[in-house]
Amino acid sequence: MVKSSSQVSAPCIACAKPAAAHGEHHAVEKGDGSTGAKGMGGSKLDHEHERVILCRPCHHDIHEGDLSLKRDGAFYVLKRGDVVWQRAINEKAVVPASGTLLTGREQTRLRDTLRSADDASLCALWAATDKTAAQVIYARSLVAAEFRQRYQSFGDNWYARVGEILRDTEGVSVAVGSIYNFAAVGLAIADLEDPLLAIEAMGTTILAAAGKAALNGASLDDVLNDANDRLDAGERRTAIAKSLVGGDAPKAPKCNDSGVCKCRYCGDEWEAE
Image (spheres, rainbow, N blue to C red):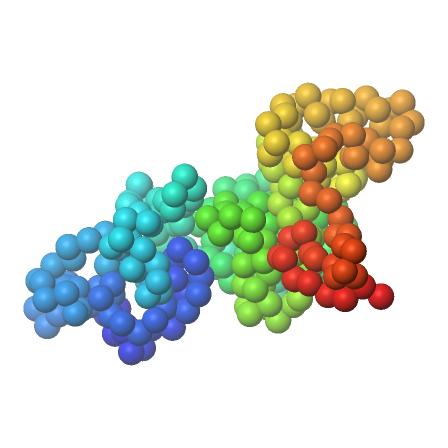
């Protein structure tokens, strides 16, 4: 039986915040074995979203038409504005409790595996730092890219939301800029035949720049080929990365005339030293 609204503490499928105890969206099993929507006054599930956990604001957004949810095979498809993303209907833990990385043949399937992983598994994989640097970068980059896919409806604050999820789930503080850059690396390596070799050969600075260039509309294949040729010619990595992203790249935080600095990622402000 699905827990009643007073018992539910699972995260919202749309934003990962704890679900509010209001009950309208929870499927409950009745005495005759059938299911009904508690609080809706009906004898069956009238809406697809009544089968999932939603926080009160996201539940409200569905009824207001600002958020939509439907089934597509093994996934729920959610849409907010122009942003569309998926969550597996039966999300599961795919990472050992110790947080160790998937290895061998499983590693080659990591990207697809993450699509059905729960948030706790993504956080555990992010925190797995007991393997080689390339493996950690590979895993964290794909995790960050998957987080971006799930929470990009937050707009430019998606990486701040992911930072909150990591902190609340794993107790680790991660710079939002790192999340942003890892997601860009994940985009750059997602379809490479040997992503670990690319990480070792090109480094995260170039790969992050390549991913950002692709987000700005550049051809990822062209960008990576250009970077590789310039590396072979002996050009410095930082110079290559800077030219790849061009003028549309996020700028480093700078202090304005009032002496206040502002983070380009989360908007936090602090006094300049």
